[in-house]
Length: 376
Image (cartoon, rainbow, N blue to C red; front, side):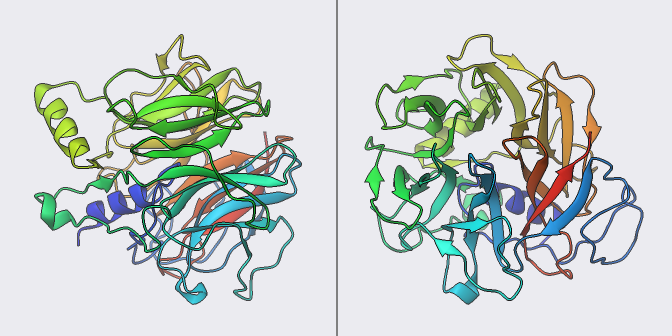
């Protein structure tokens, strides 16, 4: 399989929120490219160009680990993982202490049900409970992943209508369902204010952003334009949203998007970043880079955004972290692994950054979590 298709699969299987990871990373190695400087498989966790990252530490060791998000007190992470050694065929949700040692391959605390496929977990205020998306009410088994060859050779991503949003305590008990509408409800994240959840839903017939209270009440639609709006996060003050979106414009693009969505599918390989007020007003497009730009998260200042992108790769066959001002100026490359860096999230105090990467995996398929001090 050609590397371009491989990296597209990696992108969508690790979307922010990474809606499903049953489609495993197929990367053969983590060879650095000309931008990084080396020409062979390397095992390192830090590259010289990564001047904003200090004291990088690897947190997980094997499997597919992604979307690690901080507790409000900055001492824990909640993330999703698939690991055959743990008996998992698709993602479940886990928590870990920042200083927990998983280097021997031990399984951290699982807080999801162990059934269906899960995604997009986040701590709720007080750090005694978490929110996440799951398909387990539709079936206890992992949902079927569509095959590229069944769709004219095009990679498509399933929008499972059995995804709903749930809360549970940090031991996986006291499960409560927050969304009950027909169709896809997933990708929830929580405001730093501790008052609102933003999520993506097909309840109106398109993939739009919505907000709701922590108990699932007062649902409000935020975006209204045709296209896939998702992976949204609040600004540090809770007043704005950053998200990634596809925006089909031509008749051909619109026709394809609508036909796929009617089948519960999307082809999200061309995405740019948008910012708006939390009520949807003052919507602005802040990138126009081409390729896939996604997994955005606000810098602690609220004036910049970190995100993952493949725009800089001639064949769009690799992803690194970039930073840009919220007006779209001042683009800067932050990470330099030759294969995949994504899902950046600053700690609540802004001193640390957690992210997912294919670095230091000895050329395997493994995607692991890393944490680093943030250096301004």
